[in-house]
Amino acid sequence: MARNDLQHLAALLVCGLSLCRGGSAQAAGLAPSEVFIQTAFGDQDTDAYLAGVMWTVPLHYECSLGWVGAFVEAAVGRWHTEGREKNTAWPTQISATPTLRFHPFRMSSWFAELGVGANYIVPLFRSGRKRFSTEFNFGDHAAIGRVFGRSEVSLRVEHFSNAGMSHPNPGENFWQLRYAYRL
Image (tube, rainbow, N blue to C red; front, side, top):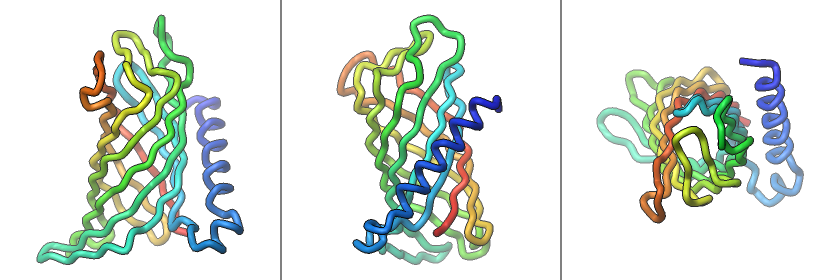
């Protein structure tokens, strides 16, 4: 990871932490339960950097193999495609994603999750052979991760597209690494 990449990631983390630690949010009972930073590597040599917050949803369902919980996350980040003609310089992503998370009883520190959310990516993303036709896109992800006390690390795969609302609709896929910290 280049020095500029680390600076962008650090700036996003500071923004995320400042958003979630505001006194008015805590007073209103809207304080998030976790903060996270994330880096991603996608198609077309596209990188993404995000920071966000997560709110635990009061859902708890037990089955014979484990239990399922839920959370909603909000994030802001930037995408970048290196060395392509006609590419978009640093599009901004704003997202909101409800997610279900499964914790197996036998390995309770591990989890798997699935989520589908709304994403606003502006300006329109273009890279090499791909061009999004809408600023509004859906992001669906699957992840596997592990909890370490108040910290957690997860490996995620996410697909972005507009679900055929407009054409072209090439989509973009990312491998993501996320670090989250429970407040």
